[in-house]
Image 1: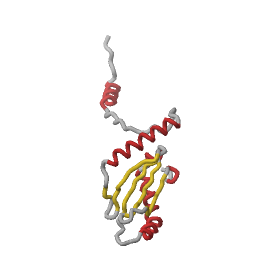
Image 2: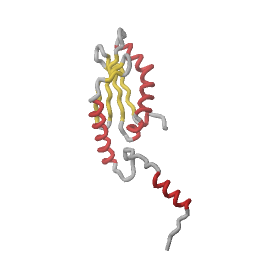
Image 3: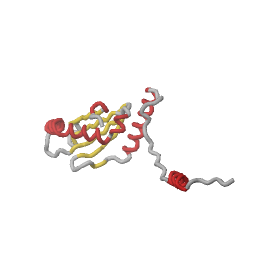
Image 4: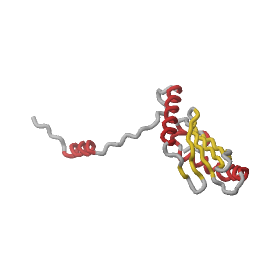
Length: 150
């Protein structure tokens, strides 16, 4: 007995079989049957690995005035430390400019650039230190709640 498969079905099957396989994209498990404790442990591991990887690339020049000098963690919080070369400006002037002009832009950048971390319960802190005095001139803390919904 000869089985005859219509050409259209055969062609469709071959195309489906030959279609490119969607590449595996690792992602964080954000729910389902994962307990809060397991999610917290996973986030701790993700933060530790991020810190380990980023530390190997330091220091990194961000722009003409800013250099990323440190990456640390506190639980599920990633902490980035930057030094700002404000030239002759005082720390107080840098603090004022930071609060008024920079903090909103930094927050917006974190919300866009770290969306996956934030959605999985990892928070981000950016600390800015004066290059001259090493005093903190700005701190921006961001959690998922601080960012507009996407």
